[in-house]
Image 1: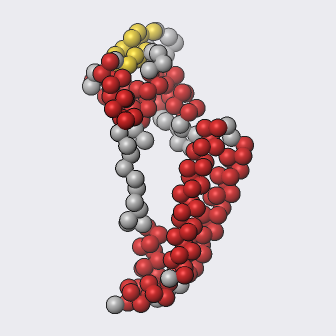
Image 2: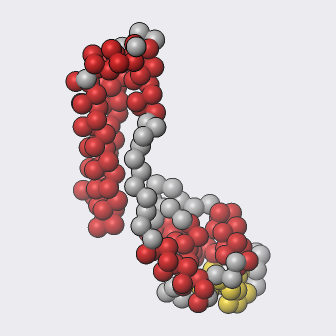
Image 3: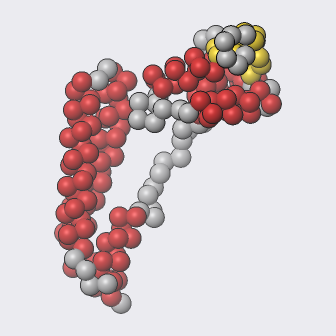
Length: 174
């Protein structure tokens, strides 16, 4: 995820302080990984330097001064271009799990155990996501669906690989 573009997009509804941007980000996107304040302020500093935001006001308070940021026309254009650019699909051609299975076969360990352990972990994760989905709002449901679909694909791969272990053992032994 591009944090800079996400913060810029949040600014399109109007100027905000860094604290407000962090809170909005965490509410909408950071359920599992909230932003650190330092990450927000370093990103805003970079966006300011690049002309994508301006300081719209500074308020004095009990603590440090609070800068209010506003998106520029260049920032709006940058967000629009980012939104219009498709994400590259991740083909997972260098899977850690595949590496573990092949290494287990090469070292005469039980690759089926590795697959079974991973299957159990995937199923555990799916149960957690399903529970979260059931209790969550629409945004949480969509995020969980995305993760669940990926885990389902992984499970299909685990089953297929388990069914082909003998052939894979022969292939890697050559």
